[in-house]
Length: 350
Image (cartoon, rainbow, N blue to C red; front, side, top):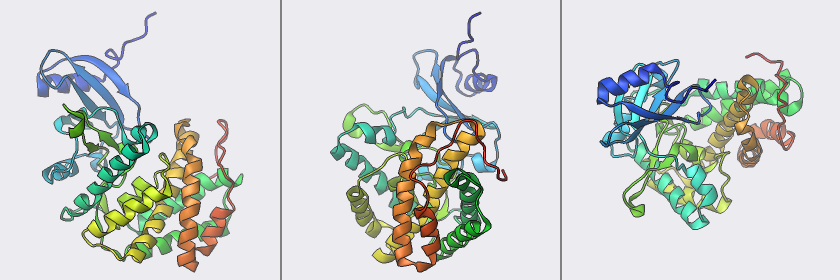
């Protein structure tokens, strides 16, 4: 029996929306590899010679206010920030401009170092522009969000790192340390942040000429208000793309004075490491959870780099703030890698 073609398995809502909103028919369907969440993406080829010839369909099986691209995509577009155009939408579905599939993550691994550094400079230049947008009515990076990252580290990651559930004393260390980080970082001016400003979410969009191509941002729906170091930590301490420390330092020194609030260098570095601690710990936890909950082991390859980034940031943070000493010791005592056997699940609450 023949297998159904991708076109046969295309959600009916997509076919209906394309025909109703664009007056076009779908000629081909390619499944775009999903990320860590439940959203699914399709590259739709459209019949006929009219442009666009392709578009991206973003399908959210559990649509809600927190998953909507609008109005944040429109806000970015109004401020001339590079984001995909929106062609049509329906509940749980967005039809978006096709920006191609050349991500900064892919380019960083295969481009010469000089070109990689140019692209990272271009990406970092977006951060002051995002932060210059007047603060919308968005949820902020707050103590509850940081506490949730602590919980995920204790419940999702430590059981595999330690080979046992976390003890009450270890949970207390993590919770108190993350609460101290939140209290410290929330003293900074809160500015608009992409929230998942990593290399995989920056695409080198197609253009008529190579010199006119530019990085564009995707996965915007999580944008929130955060300390000014947040997006830079996401990009420059990305577990999926290890960068030389010289590149990280050069970009931080270049961008800090360009930020709207231009934090003093010592405060900036302090918060950058603290944000890195919570961000990278959360990333590792989600990599482990994807493997144990859904059998998605793609991201386990990035855990080792994440641990390296976490250890280095924790050491620097603890040197500045002795209150983080117990957390630093806990991280230092972890193994060099976290093994997640395919048939094991942690004996911890979900």
